[in-house]
Length: 384
Ligand code: UD1
Image 1 (tube, rainbow, N blue to C red):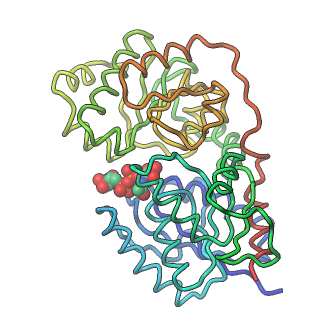
Image 2: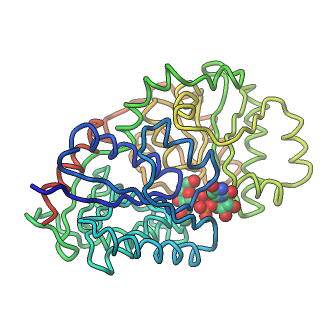
Image 3: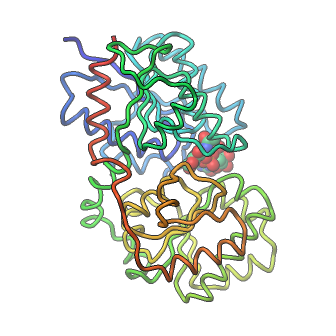
């Protein structure tokens, strides 16, 4: 049997991280069946938003980097598509693998589907039902251009069924007759795999002078939270109040988008309040081993990141979700997390509720830690 040749598209931080699980499964169990070519679009380019992950997460160096950098949605996506199409025509892959919901995801799907290369979408089927989010547009369009759809949750299956996807499995899937699978979450694979390595290698707690349960881990990067003056001010006002009321340190590894917007949009008195509070620590974005260590030892997590809200669940931490909706509805329904948007009162209320609740349960919503192996087996079996 000839090897299946796949091109993996990565670009933004979360998909670099996600891709590690599949590269590892190929290396350990499918080296004789799958050959992987990696293309980095260059959507994220700062050292600590991109390079840091390759080494620590054992991800092969990209074969290509398009270096598209930042830009408006249209400009960024168009540049990616142009570069990707050229590579696809040259490399002639059997399939293109895309992750999640970023502009790199949609650019990969569109460029491949138009020239009849099957698209494999990992993290398919998730919906926020809010099309004002650029990610929602990316998710829906990518799913409808895919030939193999791998969804991490039962909710993803329901969403795809509601959009008309058939759940019948075909021997050879096509874009018109795609195969949809429930496979668990590759991020659960990664969290299990890297948890022990993080315990051994990460020194971040010591470096930042933190101890178990004495801090709130917080991340903010959604444009709806960072780019509106009222929202970014409400969130930081709440963080200051959380720090003062609880006495816990608030640790914020900061996304470059947020750093820029804090300078531009925060009220002067709030900026001063943050600067003068020693227990509000703003640090550079963390690598994966460090973020796992920070998640495992935090008292509670406050975030608008899809990844962090789920990792909070994996490591059994309550989570305030700074969004109006989530694609990971299970953790909210199960009471492990509360949605607050950027509303000051809601954030404070959720923080207090989650800090006092004691009876949390953690059902297995996200598979068995072997999602990547399952995906590889279907890539080998299903693509004609
Ligand atoms: C993107 C994804 C989002 C994902 C997030 C993870 C889209 C539409 N959004 O959002 O779904 O959750 O990545 O981080 O694809 N910047 C830098 N250095 C970098 C990268 C970005 O300074 O390495 C700054 C630039 O000012 C840039 C801004 O951050 O304009 C936003 O970057 P962009 O890639 O457009 O979106 P993210 O907010 O990172």
